[in-house]
Image (cartoon, rainbow, N blue to C red; front, top):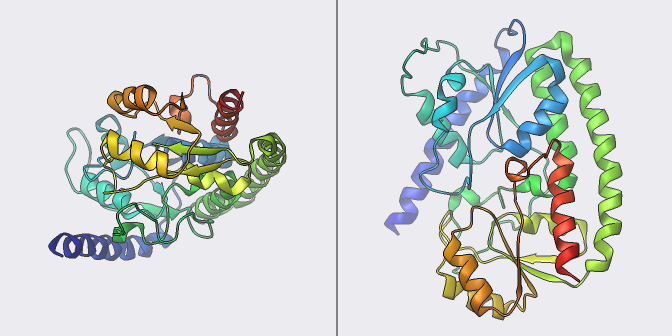
Length: 309
């Protein structure tokens, strides 16, 4: 019970902090390009498409955002202190890490008197697992809104783009039409890709995929294969043997691992499961040559098609 109380306390503290961030909507428009810190590389690539030549973006986190020791990458701390806006996913683990980073002085950085504009791109997104299910019954309060990896459902891409356009438009009203037009163009291209992906996924209907990387169950919204997961303590993988037991219970046919999955898990899956194990990046940052949000899903579907044959 003590652990749960601490989790609720952390949630309440973050919520109070974000209420304070919400009062910054009337900040003066920045001169020149808007300096935008984005929590995820996959969302940054959407913000770039929407912001065009009016934004200078960078991402704050690498790897799994569920881990309890989540921290802003040291290489971008100075840029964060000078940012005009933070685009985030509404996940309090992110806001806690960002608030912690901005509360510490960074060598060589001027103090930031004005607070940045926070743009939450999760509003209106379709969530998987509400509340997020686990193999062990307890749901962490920070996950009560549902799985935080909603951008792995490409049908949420349009929601993210529109939210980014609105937020940037609030900051630079003279460029609002430009941002909205870019979002509309992005969404039209994405709609065409989604139609194509659904056709490509049809032959994979009925395939059950166990994902060692959280988030891919959001992709199940497009149809085709079903992604199953086993969640314990957020940010912590259960033991390889426990996962192997759940793989059997879930009657999975393919196991999906991420380049960041600890190697001992991949070895155990390949040695003891008797199933095909494929490695697929769950972020554009880990896909060589990836330049767009759609590249993330093209890469996944190509791997799944190979695993099905």
